[in-house]
Length: 183
Ligand SMILES: Cc1cc2nc3c(=O)[nH]c(=O)nc-3n(C[C@H](O)[C@H](O)[C@H](O)COP(=O)(O)O)c2cc1C
Image (cartoon, rainbow, N blue to C red; front, top):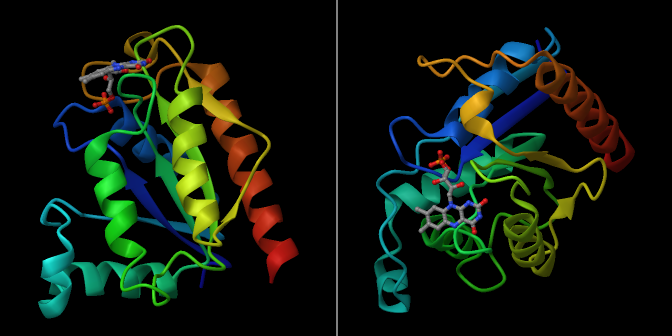
């Protein structure tokens, strides 16, 4: 039985997404006491407050999964120096209905991969802002930005960069230690 049950969210639905590949690299690097499930959120509708009257089953199921795990890894792309719209849509849904969202008290580490040189720092800031507003416990440091992602994975999406592998192991160690402080 793993000590830490984590849920990973890739902020990109793209088939060859570097952020999804990064999530897989976290899974490969995880020690035996860590389990990481990947969240499928492809069927989440575009948010419209009217839809809350008949709350989408898929969102209820996602909220349930979030409630059950010890922590969340969010791998976010950066779009126009900010959070990608689809990921913000998911964060908003999970925050609803007002006062009954699933983020409160949940440990989260935000990581991200980008093809640019400066990684995803500005996207992180926006993801973190929305989560913290919802009383999630967001790991501030260490930060994890993967720039030039196109040079770090092979054609099958396997991580080939040794430094990044070590960085992932360190991030998991820091995140599980953070979860311990909140238990
Ligand atoms: C609409 C759009 C805006 C983008 N803006 C940024 C940006 O602000 N910063 C950045 O580093 N990369 C930016 N990119 C490039 C992404 O880093 C690149 O598309 C990356 O592969 C997206 O992540 P994914 O591979 O997980 O889908 C942008 C891409 C798109 C499609």
